[in-house]
Length: 98
Image 1 (cartoon, rainbow, N blue to C red):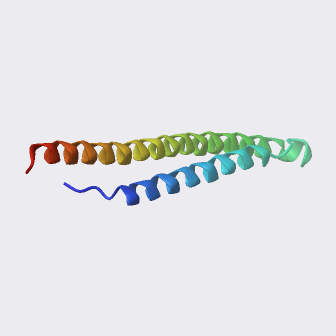
Image 2: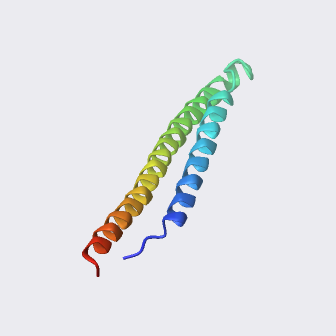
């Protein structure tokens, strides 16, 4: 079996970059929440609902960011494990003289 560990490491780096981008997006969503005073009493209910939805979306994006960051770490660990296994098997086969 052959694992392309270079490709796995590139994937892990991309996952980490995307996780950072999503974390930034989550922060921006929280910051975008408008003041309920912006449109007076007429728009207060609408703006409150919009703020609630922005907060919910920010939580969902932050959770996705965390999962992607975890996936990046797992992908890196898998690549390292494949490399370590390949070295161990190479040494074991070499010591047998095959």
